[in-house]
Structure formats: C-alpha cells, structure tokens
Image (cartoon, rainbow, N blue to C red):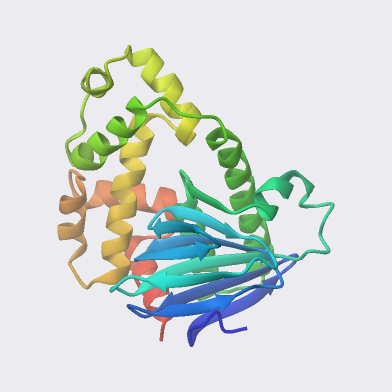
Length: 267
C-alpha cells in the first residue's frame, strides 16, 4: 500500500498498521478507498478530504477518520503535508469495540494532544528498539481513546461564543491572556467559560495555549533549519531551556531529536 505517495514508512504493531507519510505540495489522490479504516493526524500542511458531497479541511492538530470501504479523494495544499496514519485490524473487534462509532463514521476532530501523541509514534518509528512494537501499539490505543472521547464531546452542539474564543486564542496565545480577558471576549463568567471550553476541547484554556505553542514550535522544528532559540521565542516561550522542557514533556524527546526523527522519516 503506497497511500498515493512514495515517501512513507509502515510497520505492523500488534493490531495496527502505523504509517509515517509525506505528500508533496498540490498532490491530488483520485477517488479511492481503503480496506482498513484510516485514522490520521496531520502534523504539518493543509489538505482536503472529499467524501461524497462533504469536504473536510485538515491542518496541523486535526485528527480525521476515513472508514473502511468509503470512497474519497484527497487534495493537498501548496506545501508538503505530513500525516501520521494508523489503521486498526478489523479482526480486533473486541479490543476496539469502545471505538466503534469513531471507526465507522467520518470525523474531523481538533483533538487536544493528537499531535503530541502522533509525534511520539513517529519517534518510535524513527528510533526503533526491542520494545518499539509494544510502545507503538500502546500509543495507537491511547490515540484512539483520546479521539473516541473527543468525538463524544463534539456530538453535542457548542455555544456560538466558543468560536470567538478560539479565534482570540489563535491570535493571542503568545502573550498569555488572563482568564478574565478571555471570558470578556465571550461575554460569560470565567467559570462557565472553563467548563464549556473543557467540554468542547478536553482541556482548559491555559493547557490549550501551552499546547498551541508547542505545536507551532514542533512545525518549525521539523520543517525548517531555524535555530531552536529563535523558534522558542517566536512561539512565546521565555527561553530555550523552558521550551526544551515543555517540548520533551509533550513529545518525549528533545527538539533536536524530534528534528532528526522527522527529517529521517523522509530520507
């Protein structure tokens, strides 16, 4: 299986196929389907999945699903796109029973922690040892559990002001706005803001800001040769040592190791 690209690597990890795939800018994959459900996390780039009359736009941090047998096409943006793909074994029905709705429906989830979880899997692919298969299978199950919970949260409608909050945080995450400032944008009480935000995204605004900084930095680490100190400052970190600690906490490796792993995956 090539996934429409020659720049990929796949390993079997227990009940999962795990694939690290890169797609060139402006690639188009014509209508096709997969024998196994695809669960993908976009790490960088932007692309559309067209399923019937639906067009789902994916970018860094989005987890998507393409159910087994469903015909779809993929249209990639002008920049190279990096996607971590896991495909569960359909015979592992008992193990994956709690994820049934996730794996049989089309989803596009802005999933908290998806990119960090995918980054850890890519590191295992790049630096395998005698326990990597075990670590990869456990990581796949962790990612599916996160996604299944998120799919349940997003099945309930979110308040309209939540969109304003997300737009505000995307613009201001480098500057650490206070909870009162964020709540003021929504026009709601801070405690109500935190409750609804956590229901929708599975994390508090503070954790969202921290994760967004790390994800922005991870994209620069893997996709450029910029000095790490410069990347840390651009993402809103006070200094490089703070950045390195937070990065290691999210991805399990240093920024330098993450850069080597991502570059190695496309060599």
